[in-house]
Length: 191
Image 1 (cartoon, rainbow, N blue to C red):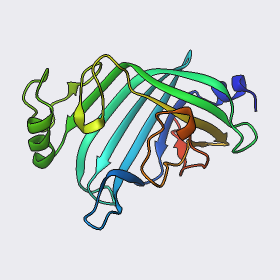
Image 2: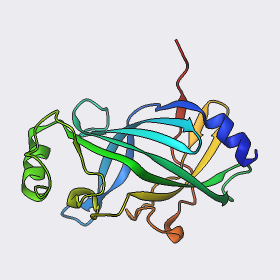
Image 3: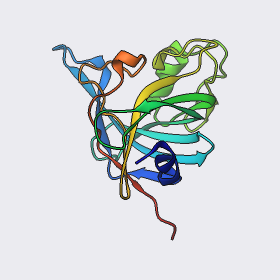
């Protein structure tokens, strides 16, 4: 599959099959990484533009919502990825929007302690833009857009990105680009 084939095949909306688990950035008292549960809705808008909505969950079954994150921006395509024939390296740049909506009191309390400069008081269900701002909970710094070095692989109605590094490292450098496939999202069909 060529890059142009990938772009054509990527068009539309993709959703998580079920809540997914990732190694989190925080550790348990025994030093192991805390799990991080999420569901994704990804839209490829064409012209190398995307939207991504992430729902974070407190539990593996997706019953208790913690927060919703919304990103919009551009994809750069640095070349083929060796994980599978037709896989492409994809650099996701959230250079248009990055928003956070806290959905539980505990997360609101944390945000009102560590993310106050440049923000209104955080409230349950109220979305605020963190675009271009320092946002300590997600490691964002002012003036620098969020970006990940990832991969894209399509197989029929399934979209694979890279599996998170098991040691919790992000995809912040080319050296940290994933080398394995993650659980896929499925194409959302029109009803």
